Length: 140
Image 1 (cartoon, rainbow, N blue to C red):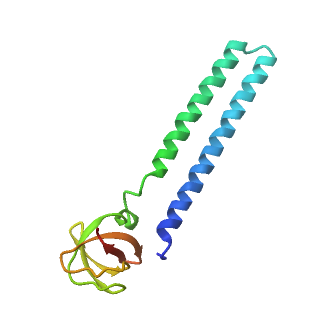
Image 2 (cartoon, rainbow, N blue to C red):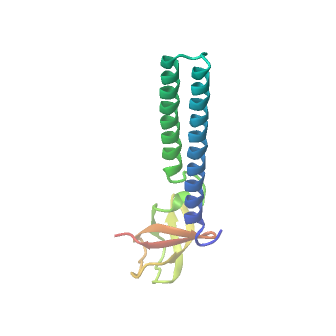
Image 3 (cartoon, rainbow, N blue to C red):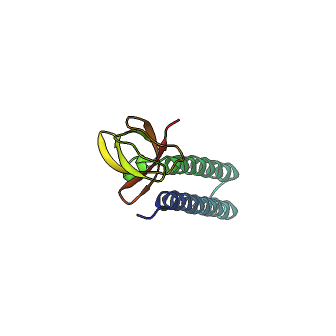
């Protein structure tokens, strides 16, 4: 896992959401066009055309909103879920130095990427992940 993998993952999620919303909008337009054609050949009245257009548009808005909310959330599983959590320093960690932190009941190797020294039992916050090493800063 590279140093920018969390950000890259969020970027991919945004691209996925945008692609899904684009696809749904295209489907909505196709449904409305088919309804318009059916109206022109007399198989669908004006009220039916308006009803189909309104239902398709409302459905699009609800589905797109749900997809956006789901993909906007922070990952709940995997290493990326650790970013933003607070833990406790198991030992002293100088700036740019390595040490051990206790996070979610487990000991992790960590690098202090902050400018402040972290002392034993200080709270730290996870700001990134590189491989199996957490990047942490002193919690303020």
